[in-house]
Amino acid sequence: MTAELVRGQNHPLPETRLEIRVSAGHPVLAGATLGDEQGRVAGAEWIAHPGAPALPGVGVPGPAAADHRLAVDLDALPGAVHRVSVLLALTGGADRFGALAAPFVAVAGPDGTEIASYTLTGLDRESAVVALELYRRQGAWKVRAMGQGYEGGLAALLGDQGLERPADLAAAILATATPEAPDAPEADPSSTVPSRVPEPEHVPRAAPAAPPPTPVTGVGTGGPVDYSHPRRRTAPDPTPAPEPRQAPPVPVAGDASGWSMDERLYNQVWGMFEDLARTAAAYRSACDFAESRLDRELDETLTDYRARADGANDAARAAARARHDELVERAREVLDRDLAQLAAESEVVEPALPVAYARWDNPVWHSYRVPAEEPMAVRLGDLHLPERTDLRIPMLVRLPLERGLWVDSGRGHSEAAGLLDEVELRRLALDCAVAHAARLLAAHPAGGFTVHVVDPAGAGAAALAPLVETGAAAPPARGAAGVSAVLEQLTERVDLLQMALRGGAADALPPGLDAARQLLIVHDFPHGFDDRAVTRLRYLADEGPSVGVHLLMVAAREDAAAYGPLLDPLWRSLLRLTPVPDDHLADPWVGHAWSYEPPLLPPGSVILRQVLTQVAAARHGKQL
Image (cartoon, rainbow, N blue to C red; front, side):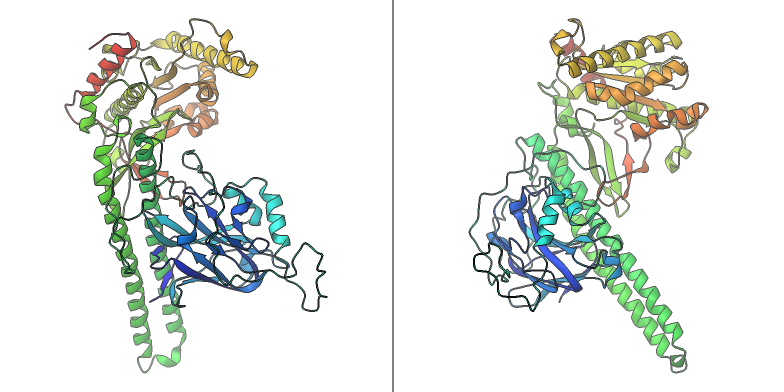
């Protein structure tokens, strides 16, 4: 039975030799790109198109046409290839897919039996599209319905896959896609351009050198949807099964690529985050499609007045609802299968996480030692979706921080915040900020991270006590004068470092300058801040991260309303976190609203003070 996919949905591939059929109703260029685990294409030599129709494991047809057949042999792909993207691009007269019939693509086995199909609906101004993706997941190949279009055409598509000079490359590829006129004279034998590129009869197996792996650069921050699995290792299944349906692989902690276990676990967590986003998107898309089809079919029954008398309308409506329920049920089965696999993976990954990635209740904190080097990331909370609230994905943020943090002590739109009074909410926000600062201190080597605190009215003394009493941070600055002195010190530091870096004179810095990264915790904002202090605060937020100076604001946005739009850039430049669960964060792939949960310590836990005591002792060269 053919699986009819919707955008974002995946389906296992029981065969490795495949034929991909394209029916567009209008001449299109068909091609394929070979990418690594992040979907990055190493160079133009890894693009199969009419001018270069044969790559290891992939063969594409000739010039632009309404129908195409692409041959794929997954076993013949180089080992570094983890994703095959099937692309379509308009050539000639048409300039957007929205004006044409929706393209149809299908994946068939060697005997011609269709495995999965997908109709690319919803396209409008796009002139190039990634139709399907064949990708490797823990040793098994799957197909995913993509339908990711690009208004910028083939150049934008190639640029999104990491290729250099995409405009020139796209122009060269499109030039090879023009079909030969039927009455064209016979080609000159001395010409170096073939008059017709023959459609491959088989997939060649001669493989050039594999493309180099792409280094980890963190998750994207927007742009076209990317369905890659960041740096997920794809070790072969030790128990291969010839049957089409295989048992899901047994999850293993660290089952991702990387130079160290910490890097592999980091990449695995991001892979889990992306997988959960994708499978939820596919389920929601399938349900939306089922609802829209049901509405359309019910409307059609109402317009057929002749069938009302004999009860045919009732039967048609019942059949439409049955089709709707069947599609939703199938989508739910796929969702439950994927969620169960991710839950099993989470159960083995969570206990294996190192200190910087672990929850506060993880036993690994009891054996904490100050690290010798900075880790890749720190955990700032947990994320989950409503499809399964008990499946929590660690929210890992790369180090060094690219921007500061804002712990919102306002009510916002959170239901949990509405259950607390204002004083309790502010206290909880400062507790979260202290926990974040403690984790950042614990993640850095001795003397590698310095924390400053501004508490103008002294209202946060109790919550700040673990930082101050252990010696991990200096006593907070009080009053307007204290605020001004700390901001002036950090502003001068940013100016000095920026001038030294721009002038290439890093060795000319003052000898007493603290080389550690700096974190400024600002509590009770805007109390104690005048206009000049606010200007300096915005300057630190904008320019500080580039030279290792970061902000951690603890404030409610409504309290700063008196400053009007002056503080909007500050608000937007910081990563907003909350002291209570809230659904204000979105992923960079499909834009789900994720529920964020702060990393609160277990009630009565003393682990925070124990860790901060070790941090302070290491800073002063003491042995515990």
